[in-house]
Length: 358
Ligand code: SAH
Image (tube, rainbow, N blue to C red):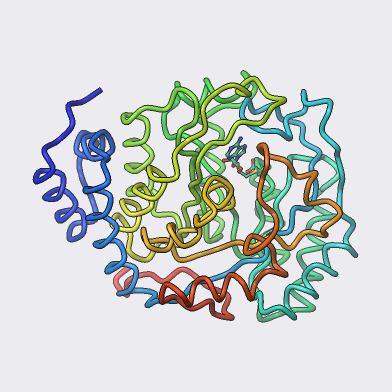
């Protein structure tokens, strides 16, 4: 554990990050280890300026459709892990998914995110057909997939079918930490290779990590920040770890909303154009999570657009929020809450904005 920095030194590093958009690994570690309310609020102020320079006060929304809860994997943190025999499993049909998009379009969504466990039933043929059908019905919308690790050929086929974006959280940029969160069959190298493949194919790629996952340290978080600095994803999804009762991490403490917000600010300073969601996990841990996320530098919210009957079954962690402003039908509430803090939910695909030189 590095020594915490004097507040003035922390602020100096944050100023430098705002201008250079990069720091040494050890400097990131110092900033993470020195997290305190004063430094967080300083970073948040800087982060909001950076976000405003690229995205103004717009909040992008994405309709999140949780297409299935079957999963072949056994990630130690996740309630959908295959060893969780108590989990209720479901799989949406093509027609159900298209109906969600129909409803979402009516509500003002112009991006649909199809997320699910790694389920062999979602073959390339099945998913390509779904993606092509969504693009045909809504050519002005973006389709994002978040279906875990697949082969390069599969990623290519889904891209050719019309998928625009892919979310695959790297979970942790530290190889040893990755091994503490996943079973032996899953490797950090493979995860990283997937992210590179997705980006080579041409997807707008989202990576991301949990905050407060078991065995996480300031040093592993510093590596997460350094990874985002180097990899330059279009999006980075972060949210606090929240324990699920039927996993090996059932009794681990949850991550903190405050540290999550501080990291959102640092990520915004690393890349002012980064798409940064105020995630469901943040909204679950803190009733004002969406507001707090925005005020720390986030600019995206992904309300739940899954059929209400299955929402409870996509249980990544205990008490996962899926109502109110967390739900697509609660969009008016989300808009109101954003307006109250000076932000505006917009009807827009919400593509990443890059500086002209990139
Ligand atoms: N199977 C897909 C989607 C996974 S769910 C994939 O592998 O990408 C989306 C994200 O939820 C995961 O990447 C993980 O970071 C997060 N998540 C899973 N369990 C969690 C928990 N207990 N607390 C907080 N976030 C969790």
